[in-house]
View 1 (cartoon, rainbow, N blue to C red):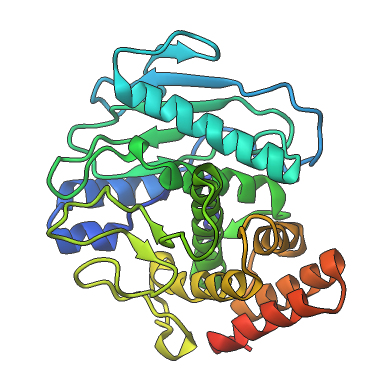
View 2 (view 1 turned 45 degrees about the horizontal axis):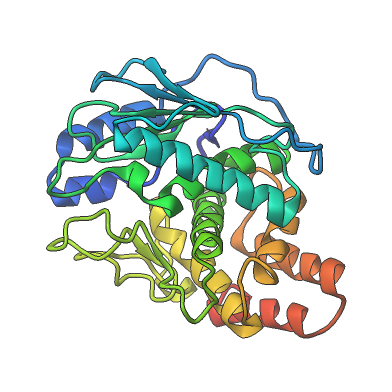
Length: 330
């Protein structure tokens, strides 16, 4: 197994290179793969403190000017006036919404739990069909206008990528970005990415679409990047499995993440109401209980234990156990 700890030393992308290749964007696929394997020169900070008093958002937005050198030119800081460039404002607003979600829901002060500044770079590359967290900041491409549109416009994409930072700082040692632990890493980001969106829109579990990246993909290619409700139905050629019967041995982390994604969906639907109020806290409480090479079965047992810690041996714990049985992990 490769020692690929996402995302303190590697970039984690919202669009897997495999999907880009299928859609014919080889340039972005190759650049994404190169960046994912590129080591970044900074020190991993370790386990996050939760509940550190909030000092409020600290957001900084940079413009790469369609180059690939980071971070780019500073274009908006915390409290600064709105930009004439709406992409700058989208990145600023959505990173603030993600900060507010984590603080108001879990009393977490930024991605590291200690008030880390949220840096974002927009207009990365030319027609770059991706967005990623590189271990210290968010980076957004503009898309090519055909396969994908601008990634900063989707709040669940922003929440997904910033949650890679949460995982980096909360799971002791991070989650190895390979195999089942890598799929769990991607799933955790999908879970909290969709929770940020549902929280912002005030949606309950029935009103939510449970789609990741809805609206950023060209209509003729698909409706979203992933479906947590019905894995394998988001785009033409989508091969995400919804249970272990379709598990792909040595498969891409974005593929097998459909299994834990669907487990969360089933648990959230069983618990009802707002997913960030019952199911979300269970998954959040699970993070420090994981280890770098956690398997699906270990994550399942950890979520069941977390449900017991939060709510006791009752309906919540039973719903979580049933969800993992529903995807054939248990």
